[in-house]
Length: 265
Image 1 (cartoon, helix red, strand yellow):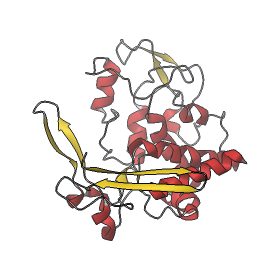
Image 2 (cartoon, one colour):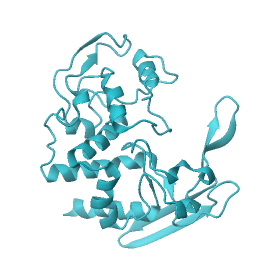
Image 3 (tube, rainbow, N blue to C red):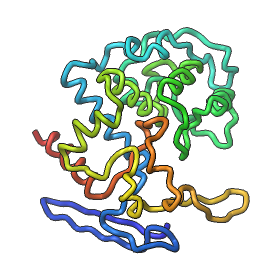
């Protein structure tokens, strides 16, 4: 990790530290450095979903079948260890609450290396949760997801991640807008989150931090995403509600202040 930015806010006082560099051979880290915020995308998507619930455009415990027909009448594995063809019908439809709480029946099975048939089937479909962004459209993502059985019955067990990706598609279909357009209109612009989104404007790429990962075989460090040759200047094929946003510490501070104000009210 070549550098970091830390922000601490308490009772109206804000302290920020920018340490190190944006890449190992790059410019100094800045307070307004842009980072891939990965799973910190998830609370943003949850807040957007609950805005639609407040407006009665969604209801927490109604089936989402009308908006997500790919998940209607799902099949469920009889056993995690069993073949993907060995299924039973779901006991009930999937709801927005299931997606918000990661209990809709599909998600990351935390077993590595993968050994269960459903893990291999998800990987073959390009849906295995991981650090890389999907290179398919939202409709194709839902089509592939709907082709797989659920791992557990809706509401039965918690499985990380995938619920937020599905919520992103749900938000777009309910509102009739691209996900980023809705988030920008209802959250990012009102909160002054000018550097948050699913892509980085060309003039701002110089503020995007590089990301690294270890090659497990070679035990060497290499670029996971080199900011100097970044794909973030273009809109993504799939605006991933589980991990796709970039942001800054001040932008995310504004988001959390909003949550605290809402909670206090």
